[in-house]
Amino acid sequence: MKSKELPSIALLAITDENIEKMFSSIDEKLDAHATSVIDYFYKGADWAPEITTSRVWEVYRSLFSYTKDIAVLVVNAGKDTLLSFEGSAVLKNGKIIEQISPSENQFVNLFQKLRAKGKVESLGYASIMVENSSLRIKPSKKAGELMVASDLSLKIDVMEKNEDTTNDQIQRDLENLIEKRFYNLFEQAQKNKTDIFGFGQHFRNQIPYDELKNWREDYYPKLKVNFQVHVKME
Image 1 (cartoon, helix red, strand yellow):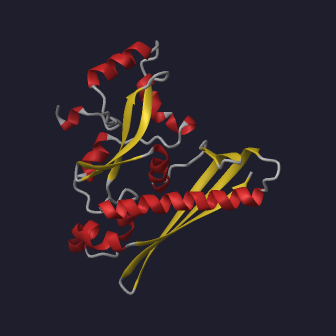
Image 2 (cartoon, helix red, strand yellow):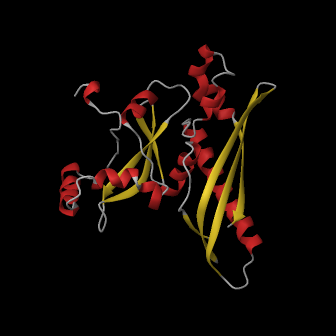
Image 3 (cartoon, helix red, strand yellow):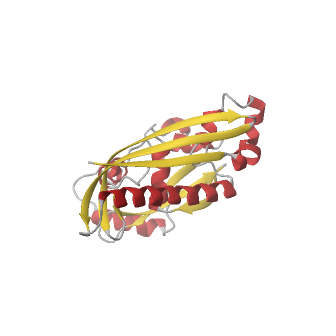
């Protein structure tokens, strides 16, 4: 198939199942709506904000990018649903380096300016739903050191909580939980030299062009990120 035969909206997903069995399972579950498979990806933001979409042209472009890697959806045949979202495979130069979980994949979505609306989180003593989110990214370079300040703002609705639980406790613990998750994922990404958050894109004008090819090896492992979460109650 030639590239011009692929529509610009064509999506790419990965499965570790037998592809024929997977398609057979999908056929058995399909109803009269031929768009069911596409709806799973494009309507995911309404009911599963951790689901991402990767277009074929985006994956192809990542093969030649010095400063950004890409996460591609991993799906298997679902038992009760059409498909089951297993997380995302992180690709660097076209090779799968690691697989991240659905909750980790949501961080990738956030840095792509996608909202976390609809995300349900359990703290053990309380359940909350994210009503809205926004992320501010501010890169800087001081004395040769690259830094990124990222502020994630969340508006949440408390669905359930224990009687003795205060809103301040929920707010504080949720902020700490999300920050810890991010730093664990970022630490692993730096170790693998995979820039799944696209931080390198913010320094393209601050690093000489002929040095951009060294982003993953020389600059990215030394990058400092200050990630802070700010939670507000609805």
